[in-house]
Image 1 (cartoon, rainbow over the protein chains, first blue to last red):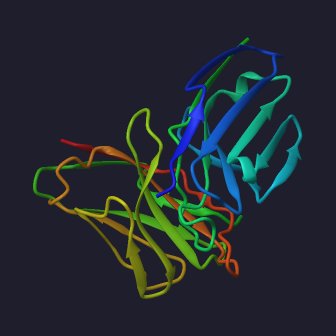
Image 2: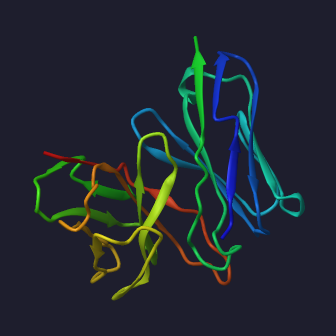
Image 3: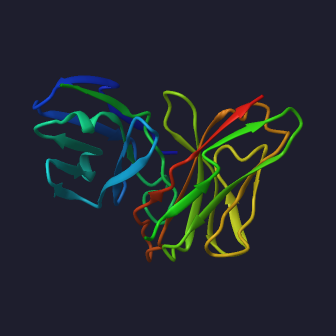
Length: 111
Length: 115
């Protein structure tokens, strides 16, 4: 099945800095989801991105399906951005709902 | 407000005991999912259901059981056969797209521990 690798595994930033998180996947997919898990365990869907780029405030995501990677950009980071970021492509390419989750990037934003 | 409600937030299981985790959604979503998360790890799929009275095993279904008698509800039972049940359990739901998966939305989770 599809393999998912996220990098870096850990990231420490000073408040106000920018960052890029990467997600590589081993097979073709027709969409990918990015999630943020806050320190209390709540998981929020940030992006559902079939291809190209989507933006939501200070966050944006780009998926290049032909090269099998996706990037999550965080600009002007805030302490509330801390937590774990997961990418999750569909396990079968996209025809059904099941996702495969990477191990995540743990982000700590210091004041 | 529409959303996914999981209960309880914390649950303790004794040896040899079955426990049931509740998941209810009022988003009118067809599909529901159960995931397990261990410390420092990603989520792994336990069971999923795309329609009432039907469900399929995920990657780690052994020691778990589910039912889908109503569209809104997808309870998960952790049986005594699950030897390492201590974990964070997350329920999710989504609509079903034609030929394409849809965004998944999650409840707040249940933390299960062994006494």
